[in-house]
Each structure stands twice: as structure tokens, then as C-alpha cells.
Image (spheres, rainbow, N blue to C red):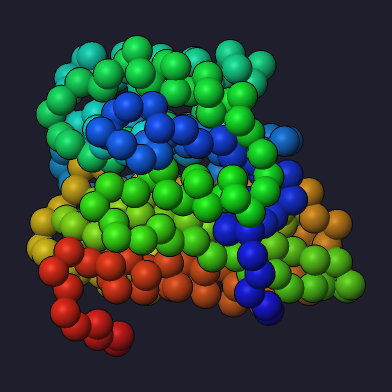
Length: 283
């Protein structure tokens, strides 16, 4: 396994576009990440009784075992505790992305992070989505912009990518994450997005993610608060020519090692950037 450049866009078939839509006073605050082909998805979400509207939307998609084509993320506004309006806004965000990509709304995952209890400025969101879709690219710069666009109080963006070979064919896993305040065991105000071009079944990916978060994100504690918006999403689009990942396959051992490494490294970066953090303890 080797570390490579490219972050969340390192795997084949993923693109992203990011803009400063004006949700935050300045800096990038919206990103749309897409897969050129339908991708299977796995997810882990907040354990908070109060769940933000985007979390409920994403949970429904993951539970329905729907293939996905895109993820749209805004920072600066969490769309949490916003009632029925928040639900409508999530659906509208998904619809706008779907229209721009000529896919279905149920193929679009939505995430938000930021201030709680304030409705989304949907005019800015709508124009931001259109700009993101127009800017889609698979470059290293596009990956860095996407990682920056999801940040709130983070002091640096967090991304990683690795590559390994099976039977002479490469499999890549990339990722980006945000989170520095309101971090408590069982994730809390943390977003993490992982992509891979591996061929893998959704049920296998979901089981692997479930065991992985226990020893990575769920080990984090920064300030004792819990969040309404915690989300970890993994998209696998199967574009690698390497043998499929499955129980007992020649790809399985290396995939699990790389998968857990990516999540653990992102979790460590979140801790290192914790609000007021002065000590880093690994157990």
C-alpha cells in the first residue's frame, strides 16, 4: 500500500466542483462530488436523538440500498432543528444536483455542517450547486478545494489517498474529513467522505464500515458535545479492473488494511485539529 496524491478524487471515476456560495462570509462553502457511474454506498451516522434533515435523507438512501451518483455538501449552516422547512430544503438540494447531472434525486446524498437552528439560504445554495456542477473536475486541485469547502472551524483541511495492487491491477481509496469542535465518542460534528474504485457489494462495505468506525472516529473526544449532523459516507464505483473485494477474495486482506488506514488517519487529523486540543493520546 502506498500513499498517493489526489485525496477523495484519487480513485477512478470521481469528480468534484466547489465554490464560495456566500453561506459563510468568505471561503469555499459548497462542494458537489460525483461518480461517473452508479456507486454503491455505505454510511454511519450520528447517535444523537435529534438528527439534522440531511442525516435523515441520507439514512433513507443507505437503508434502501440505492446506488448513488453524487454527494452535495454545504458548510456554514447545519440545516438542523429547522423543522419541515429543513426537510424540504434537503429534497430541493438533491433535486437541483440531480437536474444538473441528469440523474434522480434519490441518487444524491446531502450533508450540511455549521450553525444549528437557522434555515438554509436557499437562493445562495441553488446558485452554488449550479456553479459546482459546472466546475466538476478530477484534478488534485479540485480534490483540495472539495476538502476545504466542507470545513467550518477547522484550521486545515484533511485528505488522504492510498493505492495498492492486486494481480497487477490498482485499487485506490481516497478520503476527506472535517471536524474540530463538538467531537465526542460516536463521531459528533464530523463529516467524512471516502471513495474507492474497488468492486465491492454494498452489504460487505456497510459491515466493514461499521467495524471500522468503532476503532477510528468513535474513539475521538475533543469537547464532550454530541452533534446532530455526524455522517461518514463511503462510495465504491467498481471501476477498478482488479478482482472484486469479497469474503475470501484475493483482494480482501489488502482492501481491509487500506480501508481502515484511511479512516484512522483521517480520525487522527481531526483530533490534531481539535478546538483547544493540547494533547493527542492514541489507545
